[in-house]
Length: 105
Image 1 (cartoon, rainbow, N blue to C red):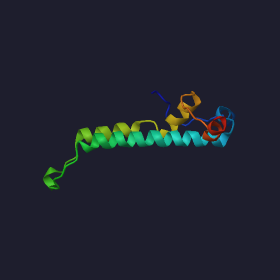
Image 2 (tube, rainbow, N blue to C red):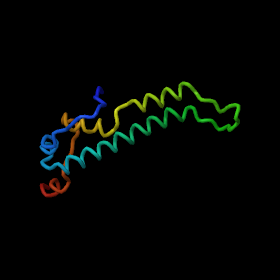
Image 3 (cartoon, rainbow, N blue to C red):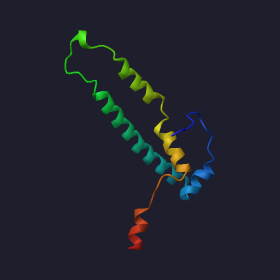
């Protein structure tokens, strides 16, 4: 996903328009950002766990170049909030109101 990592000024009216309320839109974006963050964290931890060593010998504790590259890759990725905002503005985030669904039944 190619997302511009630079700071972008957002039109608050366009954000509010998606859900009908600015605060609801921000809440939806924050929840999606949490999902993305959790997913990225699990993925990174899984990749780095391959390098975990049970031996604590100073001779065997070396900086692993591949491990550093993986970490740098994740540091360069767009932040979860940026990704969530882009998804929300492109209508790629599904959200619903459980109270309304209960009333329909």
